Length: 209
Image 1 (cartoon, rainbow, N blue to C red):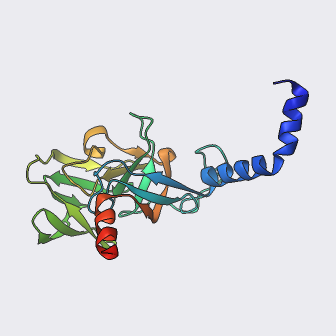
Image 2: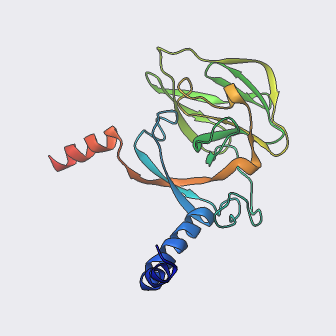
Image 3: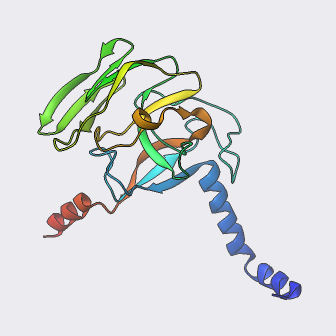
């Protein structure tokens, strides 16, 4: 395209371009949404859910980057976060179970934090409620899958986090590839903004009927 035509096109559509740039800056600095394709966070988050992710929970990001302008807080045990780990360019979502300084032991579905075993209450077959010292949350354990065990005790380093999926034996997480660095954290999951999950569709169909 010739420069004069390009300039005319930009001038004609300047309001749309400004709106697009504003939206992109908002997504990279303030809040974002993330589609969930896998079941690693079931039953809390199901495949087809679209998450609203707050980037202000730990400090605003510089627009169009994943670097923070300043920090206003750190991920806490129990937070659900999105992040880019070192081994993949995919944005993952997991629950923080270990913060800097925590000592962890993992044996199957059982989890100890700083020498204290987390309480688990069976709700139904394969569904449990776990208390991690912040607020109770549900976890899922599939009977047809093995559960990994980490020998010894894991110490979470400063500036690092240990994350796990709520579907304990259907999640590729820190038990396999290690810690999440603070710089890799995108934001905190605020809520499920929209859902295309099969469960949601089934509930909607029943409501319509």
